[in-house]
Every structure is written in C-alpha cells, then in structure tokens.
Image (tube, rainbow, N blue to C red; front, side):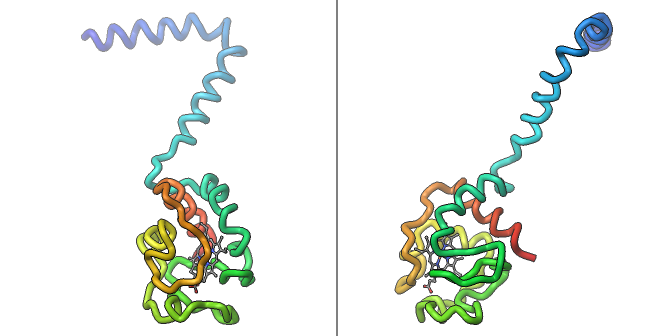
Length: 146
Ligand code: HEC
C-alpha cells in the first residue's frame, strides 16, 4: 500500500520533471550508468588496471607476441608449465625443474615475491606486494591466454 503510494508519487514526479529537463539531465544519468558499470568487483581482476601494472614487467617481458627478451614471452602463460618456452635459453634450473604450472594461484604466489617462492630463480623483480595489483595483472595476462 505504502510502496505503491511512493512509486506512484515518484513516477508522477518523473513525468512532470521529464519534459522540461530531458536535455540537461540525460548526460548526468548516462555518466552515472557508465561509472556504475565500470565499478566491477575487484575479485574478477581489472584488465585495464592490469595493463598499467604490466608496465613494470615490460622491461623484460612481452605478452602480445611470442618474443623472448630478458625474460620469456608470456603469451598463453595460463596453463603453461614453468620454464617451458622453447627458444628461451636463460631459465634458471630452479625454474626448469620446479614442476610449477602457471595458473591464478601459482602466479599470485610467484609475483608476490619471486625469490621467496622460487629459491634460485633468476627473475630480478622484487614482487608486487599489493594483492589487487597481482589480481589485475593476472587478469591482463589471462587476456593473452587461450
Ligand atoms: C628484470 C627483468 C624482469 C622483470 C621486471 C620481470 N620479470 Fe618475469 N622473468 C624474468 C626472468 C629472467 C624470468 C626467468 C626466471 C627463471 O628462470 O628463474 C622470468 C620469469 C617469469 C615467469 C615464468 C615464465 C615461464 O615461462 O615459466 C612469469 C610468469 C613472469 N616472469 C612474470 C612476470 C610479471 C607478471 C612481471 C611484472 C609484474 C615480471 N615477470 C617482471 C625477468 C623479469
């Protein structure tokens, strides 16, 4: 009863509001809808934000083509066995013999602190202490994996 009353009042209000203000109000509503749709849950990982984080990796890694640099390329890294990129000759034996399969969990642990996760590893990168950065960069890497 009360609910109907309120709804009734609201739509009556909108009806009276619309004709005069459609031109000025719609961009605001549009902006609100846009900002709401960009506020995705953090757990899914934000590919755009991950691209920014990946700038820290770019000195050594390429992900958009299968080219090795200081580090192995990261195309299709999800589901890949660690130390398995053909043509990359600079793997540590620790990496080659680790038995790690790269997925969200192993990447998250490795990227948090590469040297701690893989003793004897050769990646000269201190790690990403921020869990959101890791989730986002993993989402970015996933976008280049089958
Ligand atoms: C200073 C250069 C450098 C930077 C910066 C760097 N890496 Fe690496 N990365 C390496 C090297 C070298 C290896 C091989 C390590 C080994 O064999 O122990 C490696 C290995 C890896 C591997 C394992 C690949 C495989 O084929 O098993 C992943 C995944 C990885 N890096 C991701 C990243 C990400 C993501 C970043 C940025 C957050 C990053 N790296 C930053 C040099 C770097």
